[in-house]
Length: 441
Image 1 (cartoon, rainbow, N blue to C red):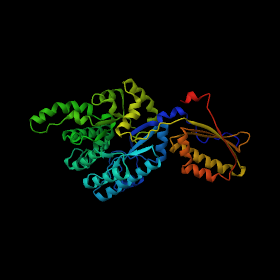
Image 2 (image 1 turned 90 degrees about the horizontal axis):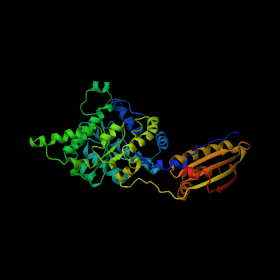
Image 3 (image 1 turned 135 degrees about the vertical axis):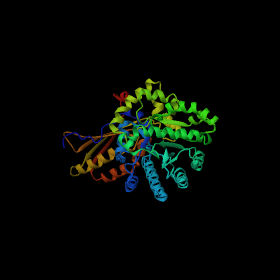
Image 4 (image 1 turned 45 degrees about the vertical axis):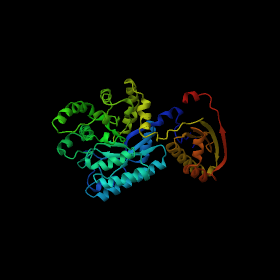
């Protein structure tokens, strides 16, 4: 009991700017979704196991990686196995669970709603509910839903509604409708077929002039543009021939491309970035992690290297990691502009018989506050070596508003009420930090 107890390692203020980063490509794999997939024997439909996911690990990853906001989507496979009503129920439950996360952790989570395709009527109904009632930030669409590819005229009513909503569409590859099972068993689908699948879907949308006919849609293409940098020149060269022979109608390729955005999930090497810049502009490139499909340590360790790589290509990491996503979603991501920081010390003497119970309360409120409140930068608690009943807490808040908001949280009120009888004395000391403050800014 006579050694220092650190409740939560101090987060320096230099970490604050990185917390504004936005992850456009990550997945929530909810219990209801995975149970439904497993009940239909589809957990290996995509050629590899669906990873485990839980909220606490996702938040911990975000904190380590310096990500303020994650845009959640449903993973593959599409939850449809012949029963349209069951599929609609799974998508509804997923969307409502994501709404609850967005509400519980303001500024930390957004989501693009799952739609129960290939049933277009059901998907349209869910899109309206998700966007107009739940406040979804967009929709996630599979490249194909059991053979129904984006660009299919059957989807026009859905696209017209999404266009009227100025919707963001997060695109994600799914297993092609016809695939050689042995081939995908030998060569993982994610290594090449997902890239092919995304490419064929975008070309099908262009061939049907979808993004010109519905000009308010904004579509995010995953995995560094997939094979589009290679496929588009060939598509352009073949288009006049196909039109001349009556096999295709004229389409405006450039106008379609102008509505596309690209995330960097996958392997954004120097060569891939160079290729991507042949088909788009820097303001349409976004950061994506593909969590939890990529290991946390790989993502955290690779972010600094990615920032350096982007800068070496003349790209501004601030644009890629933050500003482009904010513009895409219409500035809806609440990146706060903080005022003057509050740094203070709390000196507490605990009634000896309640010490262990008090430390448990303090640990819980410290961990929870820093995890879920972006404005709480540090709650560092320590015991005196000579007198373990005296606790000193270093508190750092982004500004006065963040501090006042902290006092109204359920976890702080639980701490305050639960420890009232345990505290013998409390002294709060407001400070003006001197040495070291410039190191934090």
